[in-house]
Length: 165
Image (cartoon, rainbow, N blue to C red; front, side, top):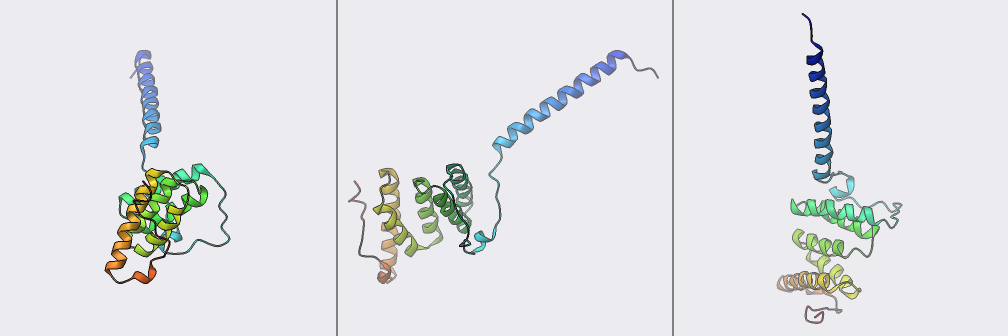
């Protein structure tokens, strides 16, 4: 059987176009993929090693917030808390990470931590938008702690929502 030159040329062109379009589609899919979820010991309740050093890195902070949001959305609060804490360590001025940390602690049910950490954040200089949201969680946790008779855990340095406006 004799293969014509035109058929070979047509086959090569279609093969080249197939490879080209697949590479374009793969490169677009990489941008649309979900965040990479790295399982490490800290998401299982372990502490952060004391010798681990965090250098200021806004890119890593942003990535940790992105992955933390994914965990928060899927109700994996322990993993989200670890990610938001790492984000804050990489960039202490990341106010969104502070707010999301408080939110994930609240959703997990750690009302004492929400109250204590939230009050600490409210004393800092953060934008009003985040301050109001954090104050709401602090007030809700305060009400819960009072309702359950855990008033000992409340600090004297109280910050109310009204004092922010």
